Amino acid sequence: MKNVIDKSITKPRFTQLLTAYGADPARWPDAERAAARAFLQDNAEARVLLNEAVLHDQWLQSSAVHRPAFSGLEARLLQRVLPARESGLMDRLLTWLLPSSDLPLRQLWRPVAVACLPLAIGLLVGFQVELVPEAYATTVEEELYLISLSDYAEVL
Image (cartoon, rainbow, N blue to C red):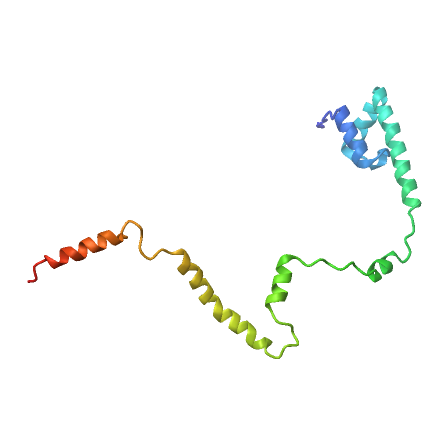
């Protein structure tokens, strides 16, 4: 007993076959080839799609033959001088900050800059942090009042 599976082809599947494999039925998958040919015989719209696929395949074949020749293109591109790159703000800042390579003290400049970095961060944080919060701060009048009260305090 043979298991016969009816594989009917729909128009979207036939369009996929033409798009993927081209108009030549020899390129179509073996499992769907017979069903696709039967669909092609029964459907006029499928024949129109096949004719368009044939034209498309011919166009692809003709464009592969008439490939333009770019002799020496790679060499010309590699020999071409690129325009000068505009340096950004960060590049200009680093050029200004770091000394040139011909300076004999260049090897000392970077450790000095690294050593000054904690000092700069400390100064930045110090100016941002308030030593005494405003809630605990006293005015001049309050200070004078507290001093005057200390005269009346008993000494034990």
